[in-house]
Length: 67
Image 1: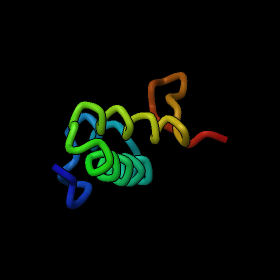
Image 2: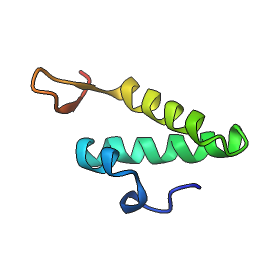
Image 3: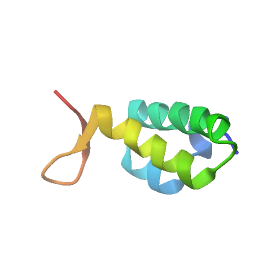
């Protein structure tokens, strides 16, 4: 189930990630969904990995872009 827009993302993603990170998550999920033949669990793992390439949690637990 690819996500049509950011409002369709899981609540955990929408509430914790900045907009740009949500865009990364959505794109990575949608690509992995197709690539791995609709394996939802794997697509979520790929999406989180893509976010973690560009973002990290700071000391307060907020997601911030990596330097």
